[in-house]
Image (cartoon, rainbow, N blue to C red; front, top):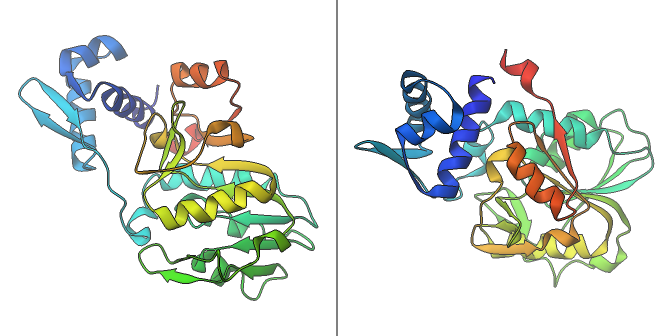
Length: 257
């Protein structure tokens, strides 16, 4: 197992159990205490966990500015975005969400023919200006921290859109609460898009699994496929598969060698 993959799995384990002793981690992952200490040190530097005498505890995240989040799990996000873009066919109308993972889709779409992109993301719209892609930007209020457009239900007629595929981001993915997000206005936009799209993909890295944040966007039954990286634990994959949730894993191992 690669170091980054193990650290992601350690983080998943600590998130589930909230407080964990170091000796428990050595047994769970079958590695030495020295290895665990190195992994813990890295996770502490990334402000994912806090250490106390003999153990560690999970730090509940808050939503940061989009510019800060762009560089988190960047390798995974690019791989997920590339896999997402590969699902797009010429002539389709797609929705690209305002998250940092879906933002990475734009360079992989430039060779598509007669493509229409609907988005509430200003960075996505700006990246596609000058390309041969038709861009429809949702009208509404600009949310500065996310560089997105929200509160658009009174200003934009969603029913006029015929979206073949929607690519949605998530701050939390769980069996119990489905897809969740930090912001109510972003969640409302995603709910609207999900309700009118033929196929809904959730593009999110593995760190968002087994996590619930403030606002539910939709239950998992409303999602067709979740696209994520291969650091997701086999146990989590099995739990989601048992519930009939399709997960498409993207191999990022080569990037970590």
